Image (cartoon, rainbow, N blue to C red; front, top):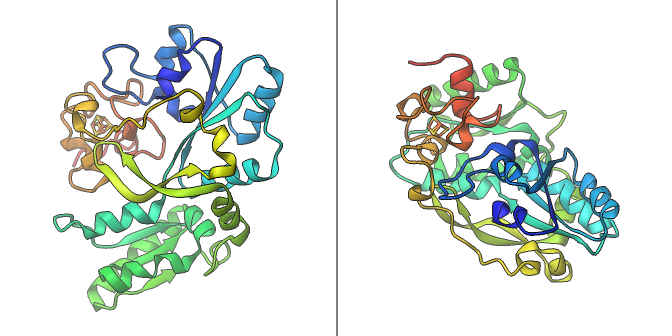
Amino acid sequence: MAIHVSLMKGVILLTFGDMLRVPINNKGVTSLLEAKKHGADVRFITSPFDAIRVAIENLKREVVFFSVGFETTTAPLAAMIRYSRLPHNLSFLISHRITHSVMELLLGIGDIHIDGVIAPGHVSAVTGAAKWDIFPKAFRMPTVIAGFSPEHVLQAILLIVDQVLSRDTRLQNIYPEVVTPQGNIQAQDSIAAVFDIVPTWWRGIGRIPESGYKLRGEFAQFEATKRFGLKDQPFCDPKDMLPGCSCHLVVMGKVSPNSCPLFGGICTPESPAGPCMVSQEGTCYIWWKYRYLG
Ligand code: SF4
């Protein structure tokens, strides 16, 4: 949809940098970067507030912000929409996702071998530590909330191993200076004020209940799907991905990146065939960077 909109006459499409190179299996233009080469006015921004600035600077053009991410990017976008006077020519293509919904789905799938969960500190800072309670309680899954330093990750792994060995499954928070039990109430309020929770598509996986957002009624005029008459196009079938791409299996923990037939050959950070190789936080990117081939 973002590629389609970016190629419409007079549109400026804004997004975060990583999204420019995410490829799809399309007969025509296969990424936003390619759309740019075909003349689309695609620009990357680093803050949602840049979208307002660009829209005000271009009042005679439609400006669409293709906004993606989990709670850490959902919250600032929600606050901006809630508290700003939005220019009439700005709209949003919302592709935000809810971390807990997909994690619960993953843990509910029987054939996935996950020994423990390191709950990400930045998401937990928004949602609150208590949101993870269900993982040890309902799924008997060792769960440790941690930050991103090597020490935090190592400590989290050690605690998970301890829990596994002692068969004492619980929630531990080693990042209390940032993650409180209730989380950021203001951020949660803004998300609830601006968005309705809806089922949404996950690349290669399918439609997951209560895992995405759409703008609430009073903000619906700013939905790009409505403004441009776009249909909710499912993008969930592996055939929509490049042939051989195993990103959906990698993110579900079913295969390792180097089991993907494209890893390191067709797919490298310089020429990614799937989203897991695009972002520096992507599993395949990390495996490639550290040459982990085992
Ligand atoms: S190597 Fe990773 S990112 Fe690349 S296609 Fe395979 S699974 Fe997707």
